[in-house]
Image 1 (cartoon, rainbow, N blue to C red):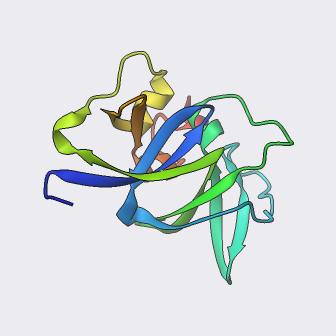
Image 2: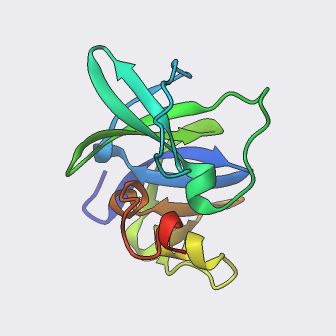
Image 3: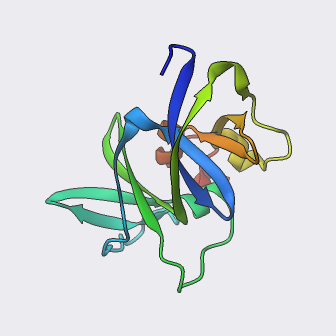
Length: 151
């Protein structure tokens, strides 16, 4: 990989391809048992026990303002490292690791909802689809202005 390239761990939410920088990903795992958190914001799906480490699970569908998945559709966990520790992002499906050129980066399109635009750093045009680059830190900070509980 050259200095002009980046790698992203990709996943899908409601058919859209999202990515986070590979170096922020701790691990990708199937669904884990979750403990609900009373009075937590709606985007907090619960807490998971990851080999003794208690990790908050954020439902990215709710965070992005898209409809909830069906009860029969089990989410996957993309565990990312943040300034505040590990956080699990609940996603619909895991994709591949993709390598992109810096020159192909563009700002997020105006067609995204206001909530989504605040969480998307930008996009890369791939062969057949757009890769929406998630701002990981902003996505897990549920208390930031513009977050779900302040809209």
